[in-house]
Length: 355
Image (cartoon, rainbow, N blue to C red; front, side, top):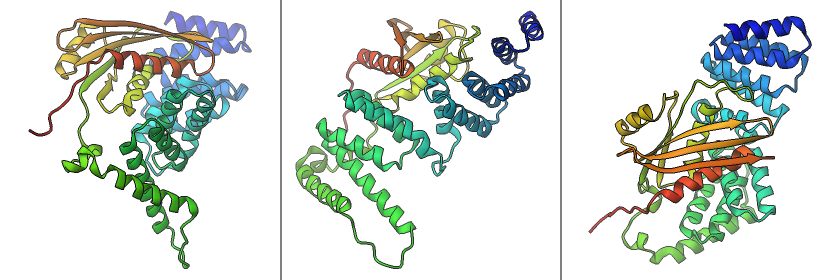
């Protein structure tokens, strides 16, 4: 193509001009020449290991070639170079959720980033941000005891005692499983923390004995709480130079942000749509209550997430949204604001269990 020819000409004129190589890699990726894009990214990484966008594009190209394990490994290395690249982290975590086993030894390391962020939010008395980050950590590493204890404490602080008790019971079961798997000749004496947790579970079991759930013999934890089905769609065709295919990654990350919301089932369309008409048709066929068309306009220091929410049944415009972010954690912040804006638009819906 003409764009590729011009990029190659720029490289030939000045072989030390890294931005020309970055542009060439982006053009090759957009043209579906993923192996060539990987070669250019490897060349850039060889010259400058801190070129985080080269790591990102290399991983994305490997993903397009169905080399998922290689993509995860590449992005993991890229994030060790630039931990603040949130789009690359979102891409990594989406693939971790899809293809990496729960027993993978790298999960605690991936989750530690969100635990650190949660602690920073807690220092600023931002309980919403801390809760969100602990949920992200637990989605990556469900067996992470530190994150689950901290999240359980937040549930208790917010008065969600039944959920708090469920978290404690999960911790107890997980701890018992790990203790039984490690064979020791001598009997293990329970530590003070385990004893305290046992006492807390016993106390809350007693306090919650007169709740409606107990009286009706219903386990709220296992009830189907989904009330709304929502689809996230995006349009393609625009070449991005900061993060290629950022709309695809953002659609997946936006849907994933709702994973801690019990009343919603949110899915992201894997491939781009041509516009409202195709999105409405797919949402209607899938039986979605609402669908959202999103876009991401990204610069090197700021970004704007746009979204238009429609009714899945009638196609009626429900809400137009725009979220601007700059500084650290701008990507996460706009996703959180997007999630809050969508949830605000959902009416309350209940379900009769029995008469």
